[in-house]
Length: 244
Image 1 (cartoon, rainbow, N blue to C red):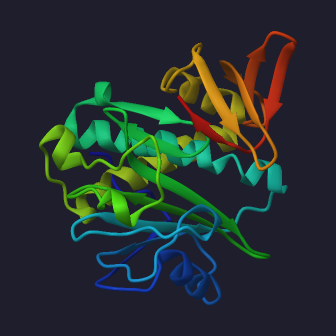
Image 2 (image 1 turned 135 degrees about the vertical axis):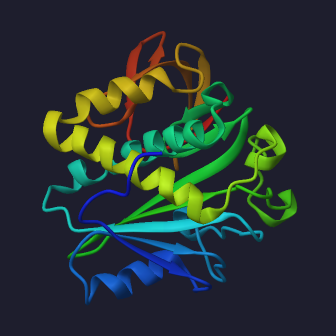
C-alpha cells in the first residue's frame, strides 16, 4: 500500500453520532485536512438526509478539507472519491474486475451497492463522507428500496478488511486523484471515471424530481453532468437517480 498522504491528519473514533457532524466540529478548530474514521456511527445519513445503517465492521469516514474554489469545482470531489474507492478496493482485494462506478456517487460490487459518497460544503470547509460495506450488507428492509441491493466486500469477494486498513488504502488513493484534479483539471478524472463507469454506452433511466428520462448513457460532461443520448439529441442532467 502507498504511504499516508503528507500533511493530512487522521482521527479514529470508537464511536460518534456521524463522521459528517464530527467533521464540522473538527473544522471549527483545526483548519487543515483530516480523515475522521468512526468504528461505530449512531446517526449516519446519506443523500437528502436518508439514513445510512452501519453494521459492525463496516466503514464510515469523512475527509474534511478547505478548498478555496467555486462550488462547481468543489462538487467534482465526488468523482475523486469514487475513483479513490475503486482503487482502494483493488488494492485490498486485487479484484478491480468486481467493481463499477455508478453515476453520480455510488460504487457497485457485482452489481450491488457497496459504497456511497456524500459531499457537504459549509461556509469554510468541505466534508467528503464515505460509507462502505466491508463486513456486512445492511438488511434491505432497513435501507431505502433500490434496484441495487446492498452488498458487502466479505459477501462478494470473501475478503475481510478492517476499517483502519481500508482507510490506509483509501487516503493515499484519494490524495493521488486530488493531485490530478488540482494539477490537470477535471479531464483526467473524467477519463478515468468513464473507464470504470457502469452501463456506459447502454440504455439507462434517469429520474429527476420532475421527470424520468430514457436514453443511452453517452458520457459525463466537463462539469460532471450525466449526458443521455436520446432520439432528439443529447440531454445533460446535473442531478438524478439512475436506474439500469
